[in-house]
Length: 377
Ligand SMILES: *Cc1c(COP(=O)(O)O)cnc(C)c1O
Image (cartoon, rainbow, N blue to C red; front, side, top):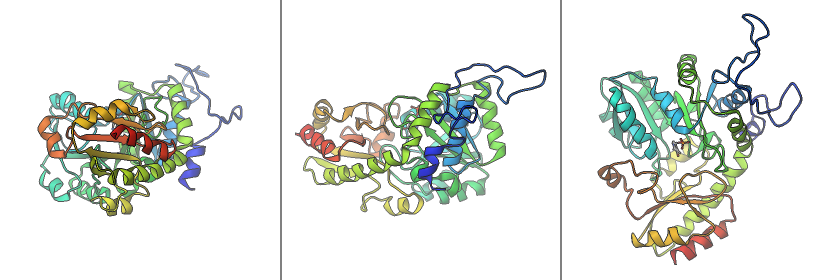
């Protein structure tokens, strides 16, 4: 079945008890046992809840996995994955990544004796050079955030398998609509559902999908023990958002192309980073491993002094953190999403004081462009 159909119908899709076409919100913390040692399949909502189960099965279906998990935020999902590792384990991490993930690794997990190397994972040789005897996993974002570097998921998966290490892919930017890492050999896919999957800038959520039964058991154990589960109402909002994933992403991508091309021709814009531009380093690889380029566009302006003007003058585009929703947002990574990343690492990556990041929404492309035009002045 085509993914455009899968997103609409989810797993069960409707409530078999009543026929309700909108999957119900089972707002119950606990469930009545039919008798001693008997269960309806639901006992207590931290363990499982019908609305969450529908969302978890839906993300598993969309990612071509077997099992899905839903968490209270993307970071709760990433943290759950990190709980699979032990002191002394080493993880190779994309150096250009979400700042909150870097903070979680460095300021929370490092003190438990885990080791992290931040590497340009779009460079296989650099990844090979960072392998240690205790390398237990690779954690990548592709396209990366905010520089849009593209890593070869299949090649990294082979490398990881040879080491008996896990390949974990944060698929937030492209979603399963454009990219399915499990099909390319990844072991775990993780999402901030807050972004494109939810799609309306109204709900925090985290999602995981896996194919392997052992991994699923381990994740389930952490999920029910730590309890950072997604609430039934928020599961329902995610299910509702996912139904329109295909139309939103097609429109957002179409707009992103127009905005990226327009930015390329603006005299006050220095560089444009969008994997859909043929001159982008990751263009060919993106075409091979994904069916689209997404709608995140980063660019540098010629003078740092322009940044404040742009952020202060945008009207249609909202100056706010986050991405992936129907509203176009503009972010200043150096002070917002990437403030936790040390200066020298940011400099190496190119996350400088002239870099802005756009999450292109579903508005009319002309209005987004006109807004940028007047904001650039
Ligand atoms: C936002 C984001 C996260 C964190 O997700 P939350 O839902 O904010 O906790 C992780 N990875 C990427 C790529 C993100 O954009």
